[in-house]
Length: 231
Image (cartoon, rainbow, N blue to C red; front, side, top):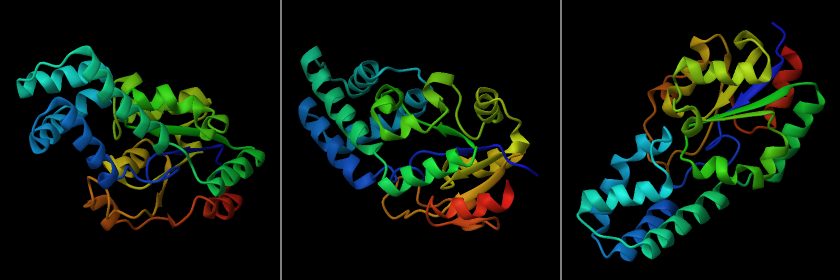
């Protein structure tokens, strides 16, 4: 099989994993702004994850909904302060290491199209154009914009359509969150697990990763060797 494209996951793959410790500290600051119990705030934020990742709630609407669930009245100033904290975290979280950019540059110079599929809230596509990654990604696909998430077959198909390739012509690389590798394989892509440190994530137990029998890489740079044997 001749592969024409590589589609990547974002967190834990092209950038560091979404840090639970760091984001919990940010959420503690948010709870203080609202003068509410952090555990209750944390729970309410968790309950709205799906709506955020499907684009059903803007950042401001999300905080308003959390306040409603907590029985708190928040004025526009406090909501804006919280959104600012979330935005700052997101902006800083999507900056890749130089070696990742070097690998992507080499893959593109080898004639491969580069795609991205990520389950995320609306802040990620808003700040993605500022990330150095954006110049290497031919087709970024964000769950909040498409209103579907991995491992839905449709989100992989959208990425292929935008790259003008067939799923069988694609390699998918991810750290195994959200059953993404199974989803990629189901549509005909070649899935590759990017091994990641799972000690600081919200979903450390991933059966897909623990039972993985396919190709594994430790660094994105490892792909350059693998791909040269496949394309």
